[in-house]
Image 1 (cartoon, rainbow over the protein chains, first blue to last red):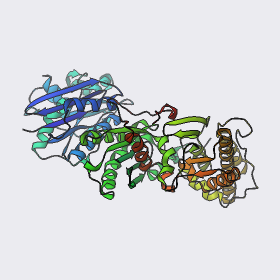
Image 2 (cartoon, rainbow over the protein chains, first blue to last red):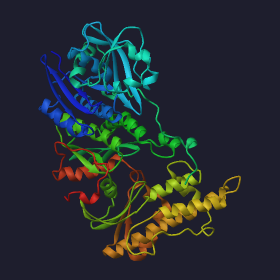
Image 3 (cartoon, chains in turn purple, orange):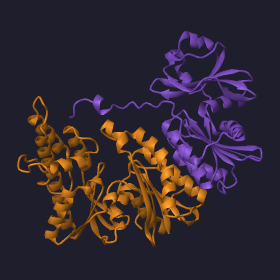
Image 4 (cartoon, rainbow over the protein chains, first blue to last red):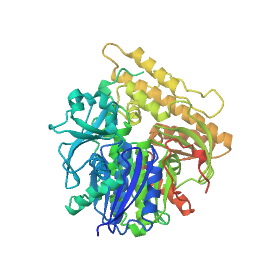
Length: 232
Length: 341
């Protein structure tokens, strides 16, 4: 039976989950800016003997807090390189949909708009449909201001996640598409596991050297020399 | 004892393996200067992003270069601070998870202790006690060192670090980041007699530094020389010379004063600015008159590097120190808080 460790530090929550012999153990804590401090203790608690018996390590690859994504990616690099394990990158937006499925908020065939707060007035989002109990991406992941959000298709959607704090700023057309809103749902290591297991079975893994966060927002709001004013 | 060291506190990814019996076995460095040059300084987010890409390949490279298997490693040291928090997190998390997976201890090392001990990597290295001048883009400190972890701060910059002043002066002269080497290059063709820049705080007692006034003086000189076509090449060389002379003279005067005050005859100079040749020459000449000696690291270990972290970590790990269960990075971390060995 497959044994997979999952790590998610993409939001203010820090979570690790272990699938082994068909059972799942989860450790989760709301821990803004304390992920690095907590993660190792959680790993030790879940795997007192180290990562030796694992088949793979899954990590929430993004989008999310840049520092958080790097903590999960660096941890996955360390474990996968040291224990010679494959890595399974899982979208945090997809993991959040999986969370909604587990909580009974999104059923089979349901369309789900998964969002995260990207701060500076923007949200990360992607659209999914639940197929065979798993989220299938209908759109690519993107970052935009709420008023610029255009939800693909015409179906009613269940909207999830921290990006929904901008609901009031979305267009009337977007708001009219949302049939239910659950803004407290979060991505978590536990909900990474089903997606990771499917990816592992499909052979969709990467080597430790290839592990890297998916930031979605790649431009840096930092002025280049030519844009900076005179020196003082 | 064989230790893997990781440095990711700012804009260089450095990895090395140090063996307490055989010395430095391998080191590798990736400098991000080309990434930050168009911004005129280090962009923390870009620095962190690059550490994630470079750290693990460098670990693989040094293990290969040192022909070291995981079973031969006895511990992993990483820079835990001070530095850019996001950048520190990358090295810390990678080091901690590697160590956990290999069932060996990890230890967070103080970046400036790494710099301070970097001259110990040389065959001819200083003996304790000594005075250390730590001079880089982030720090300008004089420290009395009685042993590893036995540090007393004698003086420090009250505003800009010396390296920061070099970078800012370089920017005023239209030179690229990092400014130190560019200023030094222009200064070689500069006329030392044309401008007389102030030597900040040398007439005051004590061992503190201040470089912000010198920065303002440089800007005023630049503005006074500039016409509608800007500065001439000779203007730039002369200003660079005057600026460098002022910084070097200030550092030399304070180093001499520190040795006299502490009654010591050994000075260790470390950090990026310690690569400045004029500073090395003037310090050597001034200390020779006192019958004192100056030690500095090899040029490749003056700037940030993994070797100094592997060395410092090896000393502490060999003494039984290791990370506690919830150790984290410390972007601000006074060196005087370090535990003695």
